[in-house]
Image (cartoon, rainbow, N blue to C red; front, side):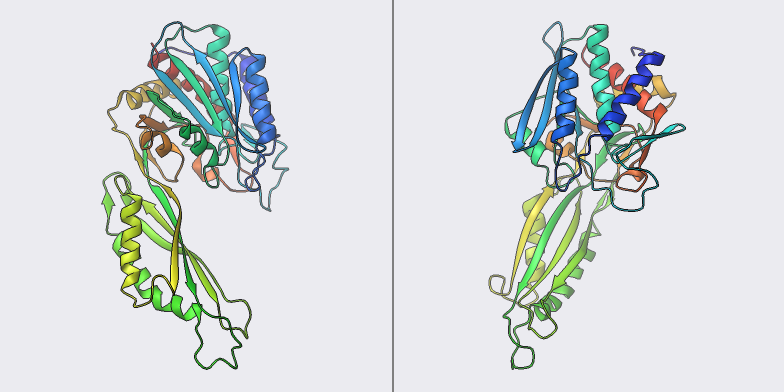
Length: 386
């Protein structure tokens, strides 16, 4: 495994790079990744790395860059998202100031996942500047809209993509994540007829209809929890929001719940939807007139064989830099299945930062972990693309 030492100046340059990424706000919503995307593209182009912008929707571009080896060979994708969740209240520092506090960098996106993006960029810079020899191609993809509905990744894969390996730089504390649950989100809406609450003799209440559906809905939640995977544990289904009615004196015309379903490897969107439809059909309401279902998001589960060469190489690279390597699962959902399931590309999730820091106030990443990530990504790329 190639050793990739960083000089003092390189360590400081990487810190500055991450701070600059944080200082380009890219909250989603509303989806303002444009400035940080242009910053990344300009940096890579200034180093002589082939780079282009792929506009997904107006003002929201993916950044795609390529390093080509001396001979044809395999292709490795380094991937990270450029959007971050909204800051929210309660920060002790300016969330976009990129405050250095001892051994930590604090700021929105420090862990999720601008530190991963920074380390991947810096790995490409090291390979390019030092003229490390490799074959094939390293493709960098920094996409928009991971935190919402995956517009950037969907647009990228729709153009057609093939690769031999992919690495998603989500925060894993540099552990090698070989699997994660997918997610399916469904909106269940019941339909009534508005009327004056005091005058309507036979109210057609959307809330009453939702109440009639709830026993079947909760039975389905309990049934889903019986499904088990040896690595990921149980599937789950949970009603997470409920809204209904418009005023205290009006018969509710509409009631809506959101359903969060966590998906195990092998589960199909069509099967999940059909099971929910069957469960609700037993409640005795009219599926067309009384209620409707909208499955507006589905990301399948992702898994890779723990003995796959990508996993083994990642373990070697991490161990060489940190002294120990750990294979585990990723507790959240990410965009790995777009590669692993949608494109049949062997994929792992591995990056600097702790997942517990994602989406919280005073989000931070440890500086040493940032440096280690850049070394690991560089070494891993060179080993995979011999």
